[in-house]
Picture 1 (tube, rainbow, N blue to C red):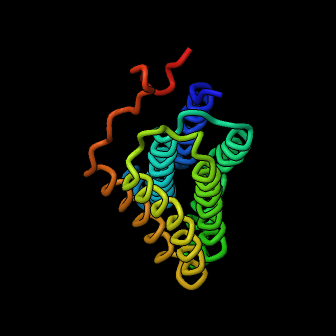
Picture 2 (picture 1 turned 180 degrees about the horizontal axis):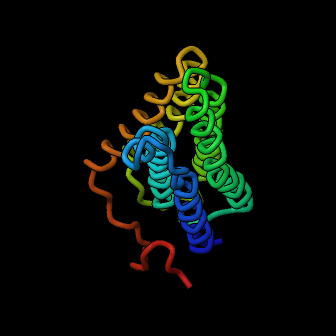
Length: 215
């Protein structure tokens, strides 16, 4: 089975998840302090949640894209694992809203909700790593001329990310502000790393047809 429909569904789901994040940023109820105070001091947890989750989902989209640049065909297991991954992606706005709501109301009591947020991110990245592990074990799904070094870099990146998010979730139980910083640092670090690397050209089949355009 070709990858076109799976990638189209995935990109649409990522777009929905990114869009849902903005619905947590609301116009505050007017108070006596004035507009500037209400916008910046009353709503800052929602701005923080929006930025961190946008970075995180963006990083996951880049990793997902990197996986399917390597893939020529998919099987039923790929479809199922990808659906589980997308279900978790579109779930991310919920722990984001839970986290920002609690931080706005009780800024000193965000340990459990910050850990819940981190465990959601760890679960997302773990499923993507499992998907890639399945693809690696079936070389017939990969392009025949993939760069072994690129495959190794991708494997290392996908396997390390859930460990980093799980560790950050554990740190959040001790200090949720530090945990939030680690979530942003992991995503931002990957975005900066991938932003300094040129993407390889799309692999082609022996007949010269670009990947994913077979008929």
